[in-house]
Length: 170
Image 1: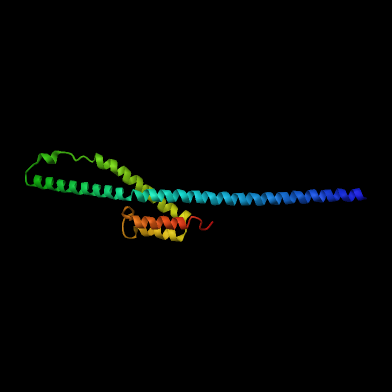
Image 2: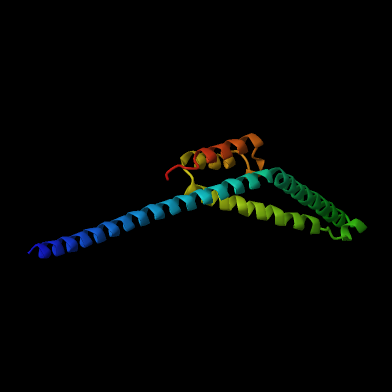
């Protein structure tokens, strides 16, 4: 009889051990998944902070390129208007027969478009990865001017807020 009891005790112990092992495995899996999820969010936030710093570091150059492009367009329009006016008066100028070379500005346009695309990407991802204060700061950039008009002080404010919210909602 005693051997029958010990057999059942052994069976119960094995079952209890298996259940505890199973529950501990589930707990470990949940903990590991949560840890990996938090780390992936933190990694993405780090990348976004670095990208934000990179985009805003180029803001001055992009602003200069945009102004240069606008100046070239304005000059081109003025020359075209002058040539049209001369033709209407029956006069011609050799300068009006020359084509304007836009190749330099077209090369710069690539950089403008590239950084504008990076900014738009940031603007789309910031609400997904950061909390309210970062969103407000980021959206306030374009409240009064274009993104490339951001000041170094405003850039530092945004980066500091992003840093403070590095672990928000985790």
